[in-house]
Each structure stands twice: as structure tokens, then as C-alpha cells.
Image (cartoon, helix red, strand yellow):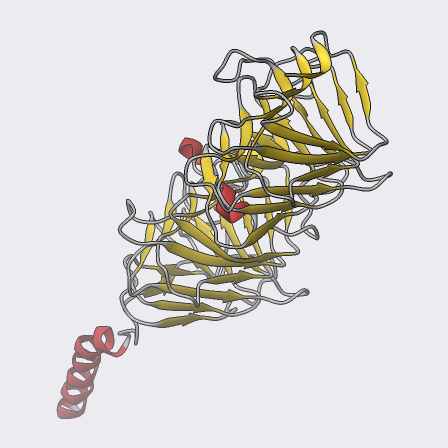
Length: 414
């Protein structure tokens, strides 16, 4: 009996030694679940350990509906291919950030219409974590049927797509997704970022603008996305940039309750077509130039309809001339405004001291050409249309149906 007891005790001791090694996980990027973990209110969630350096697939592992499947203790860095399956919920702690920035990193987050992937804060309030930053230029980067919420701390967008100081171009697709309840901008695309695909998204209850982007990436936007939804600014904010994409870019109508907000001068150096119904608000002192230096391929086509005019104006809350206006600097027969409204321009002078809603500028070519029809030109700080160097320089083709009102220096001047 004594020998038997001794043998049993030896087996127990051996089991204690072996047990820790038998619990080793297959992937070091995932830690064990912790029902009492303070970073998440969910039970059964597993920890994601940063950095993720091996390809990994996340599945919907938590049987408790609506609770997190995974959590992180601090910011999460991706240096491999991460595939996220429908229904997965990932929680981030205060001030954390999800960074997809290495050349070897890619994220494939594809949910479904009934089973979305959710990136959220452990504290369910706007600004509780920073958001997602994409610097990887992998063509697989895709957020489809996702939700990004509670981000925006330290003035970070919920989703940012940008390069690494112009050394690389961040690339990502955003489709069928919802960006909501964030403290700052919903999505930011920098001038060294590439919005590879964008369609059918929703932006609501974000403290900043729905989208902030440059001229080139504005042409990637679509008219089926919902930009208006109690955001700080319902629409797309365009920062100082040039349109340089070869060929013709199209800027869509953002919907009845949404508009573009132009926060700096825009230089259009290639062809631009604006869809009927689009509305532009220009911050004071800023405007839009078509052509000029290095802009010989530029033109502007803005053709609305009788019930969907294209609007170019100052900020909605201003009722006096404040922005610079539109400068046409190319002699392209495609330059046209039809069923448009241009108002409250001429708030600042053009380079030769002139003020107008529309300025045909011949400094860069022998002529500057524009066709206008069925267009309202009103409330300028000077002329309705200023034609540089007289009729022999700029060419204004009036095709009828135009209305000029309250332009103190004249409807057309030269």
C-alpha cells in the first residue's frame, strides 16, 4: 500500500510539471481568454498580442451575441496578413490604435449584410480609442460590411488611409460599411493615400466631417454612400490639393443634405466633370482654378438639370461675398456651366485686383473659354463674370437662359 501511495504522488507531481506546457497556443498573436479582464466587458474574449507577425484568421468565437471576440491591451500593429471572418467583434482600450503599416501587412475584413465585422471601443463612447490607420499598399486591404465606432481620440479619424511620408502609398477599399459615433472625422484619405474602392457606405454621428480627402481621391467617391447623418459636417471636406489624375475625373452628387466643403484653393490640372446636384461650399478666401501652369489638359464640365442644379457658393451661414470664385485659365471647348448657380464669389481679389464670381484668365494662354447656359450668377463682390483682356482674350459663350443679379460692378466686365 505504501508503494502504491508513493506511485500516485509521483504521477500527480509529474502532471503538475507537464500541465503548463500542454496549454501552449498555436499562435503567439492570440492570448488566452480572461473572464475577469478589465479591458473588455465581454466574457470569453481572447487577447490579440501586438505585433501580429504571422498570418492569422480571426473567427467569431464568442457564443455571447454582441460581445467581443477579441480585445487588445494597447495599440495593435499588423505585420502579416490578417483575415477577419463575418461576425467578429474587436474591442480597443482607451487611446489605442490599430496600425496596418508594414509592407508585409494586409487586412481582409469581409463581413456580410447580416453579420458585420465590428471595430469598437471597450468604452462605448466617441473618442475612447484612436481608430484604424492604413499605410500598407497591399491590394487586398479591404473593409466590407464593417462597422468602425467610438474612435477619434487625439483628433484621429476613425479610418485613415495614408502613405509613409511619401515613401509608400497606403491603399484600401471601403465598401458597404458604417462609420459612426466617432469623435472626429469619419474617414481621412491623404494625398499619398489611395482609396482603391469606395461604395455604399454610411457616415453618421461623427464629430467631424464624414470624409476628408484630396482632389484626386474625391473622384473615387460614389453617390450611393450616405454622407448626411448628424455629422459635424455632413459631406466631404477637400483640403488644398491638385487634381492630377490623367483623363477625366468625376465628382459625384453627395445627396440633398450633403455637400463638398472646400477648405483651401483647388487647382484642377486635368479634366473634371461634376454630377448634377452636387453642391460646393468654399471657405472664405478660397476658390477653384481650371488650368494654368502645367494645366493644359484641364477643363470643367458642370452640367446640372432644372431640378438638380450644381451649386458653387460660400459657406451656408454667410450671406456676403467671401470666397474667390472660379478661374477658367484654359481655352478648352469642353469648359461649360449649365444649370448651375455661382454666388457670393469675389470676396477676395484675383491676381490683377479683380473680383468676380467667374474669371476668364488669359495669363497662361491666348484665350480662356467658357460656355454658360441656364445658370444663375449672383451676389458677387464685383463682377458676375470678368473677361480678362476684353473679348479678344477671354471668350464667354452665352447660350441663353442665364440670370445675373446683384453683381455691383456689372454682370460681365472686361
